[in-house]
Image 1 (tube, rainbow over the protein chains, first blue to last red):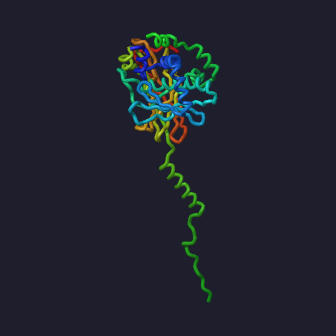
Image 2 (cartoon, chains in turn red, blue):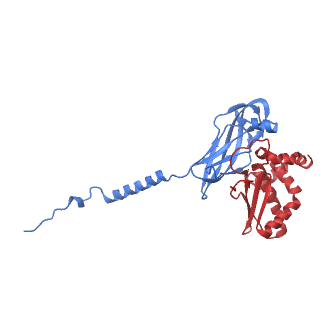
Image 3 (cartoon, each protein chain N blue to C red):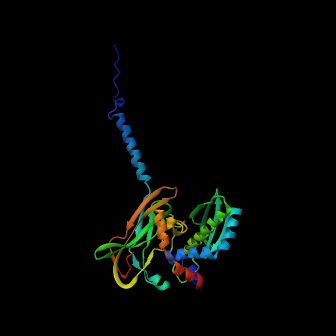
Length: 166
Length: 165
């Protein structure tokens, strides 16, 4: 089993560093997939997909993209967990959507992991408040300059290398 | 002979009318407060503990913090920032500050939101005393915001030590 496959089973036991590295890994390894998904979403204003044990529905309404998710086989969707404004320039929107997809994939993987040995606790959908592609994440909602400094100091290369090679 | 009609005692108020209106208003306010109280929310922060489930499944030692927000009305989600503090030479030291997390309630239990993923690696075999704390807010269904904060109470020892941040 690759380390990525292991991550799909870790769910709530993914650490902060695991989640950030997973985001970066998904963004680079799914570049073409995400591009195709972004085009589909921009064309149809709606997109369904599956990741790990979750199902995600993306919607674009009035230039605002949102997503909600549910465990495969469940009736109950979460409320809209994240939103991002599109600016109407396709090249830029596609780039932004790729990040949004990688972020939502990490959110879903940690909440609806593939069945494994890890004990899953009951509860709702739980995510990092600020997306990894913003400085607000690194600053925990505070000063963006602090966020930039913290981002430059953050090094998840060890986990990223594990994801790329193992 | 002129007829004198006596003034009816029923027409003479014993209690001034302004007082009657005041009493009725007070009764209305008290009735509404008792029957329709403002929703309240509490944050239950459990004591940080050495997680055996992480040890069994991931094969590393970690101190885990479980947090639940509970409201008297259905909630949309709760957002918190949590931390673990440790006693070091009788001084409180923050050894873990978790980045802000948001948790949804579920259809099954719409008044509660549970936080997962709050754990930090530790060195097994070294005893340390910990306390968990968190603060944030709850957004109730309908959009009302309620501030919440809480801690796990007194410091409790665990046989696993987190290094200083």
